[in-house]
Image (cartoon, rainbow, N blue to C red; front, top):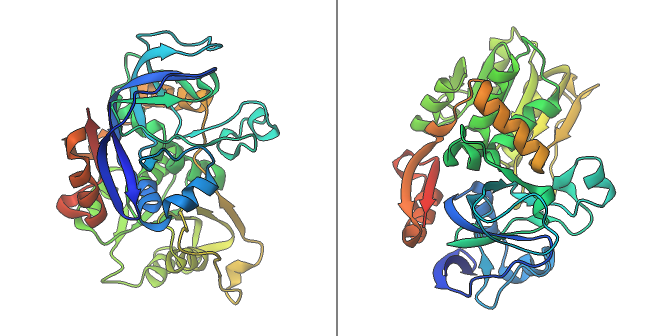
Length: 352
């Protein structure tokens, strides 16, 4: 089969590899849709393969690191012990899988599994394996398209999770720093959650327009205005109830801590691969009694089914995030496009 493999730091290749055979608890999925994520860029550009091999034991192949953790497809083969799936089922799996037995998994916190769970690598291929499928995957309902289902496996769950874990209430104000795919999902999640004033911070024109489309009342361009000053002015100097950091830089994290009200919440879903530590100002009044939460994509079959129900019945449509479509054989061009943000790219539909 053909698979996208990271062969070196910053380099992906389309490689012919053996088609895997599912082991106990696993299913083999024939890919119908994959995509490229911001986390893929972190894995590609920031972590050498030997580091990835130490972080996630057993993930490297002789060719390198199998890429892609977002996929939807048809069950091709079922391994021993799988009870919920059979060949021919259309399924989606969370981008993070868990063992289903550790304390974290038993609490429903699949994404922070301490029993061997990790990211679901290898979806950018003609076939991929889902480990512990009964815990980590579920059927895609007929009323949910492949495009919507694949967004639920990662960025929708992450962006909505940033809003949920912040405890945003009806009418609360929120500022969301960066409107990449995850930030845009946080914007849509805030609107779905019943937020009042939603302020987005973004400089890319196409992303600014998408933020408005998904529910932002105001979009601040940091190239033209100081976001901290503008957000405080928009809230009469009080600050927002919730500030979401959705890009993963020191500057945006610090800005989020400066715009939140006294007693408010900073919610971070940024990936800080290049930052071994973060700092924040202690001289601002909101430092006192502030709450800071971080979110790693809520995962597991129950999470997916809740999101599918929201998609079907909650008037949620995130498919406009798909701005481009390519075939698997064009995956290298897709990575170049995603890295450079050219042509207003947000999400790329990748089909074998």
